[in-house]
Length: 315
Image (cartoon, rainbow, N blue to C red; front, side, top):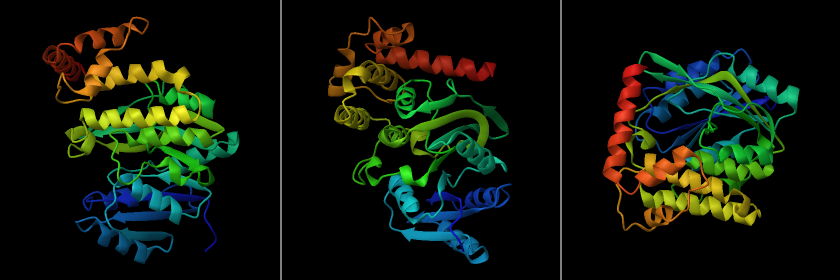
């Protein structure tokens, strides 16, 4: 077959229950010139077998079986094997609305984009929540980098389409590293190679909340991993001569992530002490208050938990 316009890349690990739902959502897309590249990342369940069954039925589905190397490495493998001009990433426990590929491709073609972001629908049981981007329109690579460093940025690994030729191996973290926010790290690295990025509020992705995921379960909520992440971000920006101009944004991110994304505090921890040493007097009210409350971790956690419970009751 000729090379398709679009490659849908799906990493698979331990998702035999949701993979059929995921693949079926791609098969009913209104745009049809695509291939599906499934990367079985050493899945211990029957997800790899299910992928092979679909590939035997449809000639535009290919399956790569590899030893487990983590999500970033699986995405890298899928990109290498893809043949489309454009890439659509999709997690195997999520789905695409039937017009998703068509919508994103139209944005890319009409605006000559290297990457187009839509928005996702968060699904929790029978409840659906649609969020929106705080910034929309066509951004330069530099503007996209600035957006990625803002707390209200909603640009993750999926609900986007990108040109395959903008990707480089070096944008992925080394297989020996496990960052708690790989999506942000990869996008920051990728921004170096992007000229035009479109941000839109079209719903192009269905994100099913998984209580067993690493992020929700808290397996990646440690100060050591977050310090490694921010060290890597600073190293990347320093190499590009942009660290000085972005340092304030990074510090605000650190205060936020230490406050909301760390389960347990050790007041002797080097990163905790580093963040507490920052002068936040010129930052926004929320950051100043959070930075102040970090000195009393138990009180801070109580207030965060109480606030979340109130929001759930009111929603």
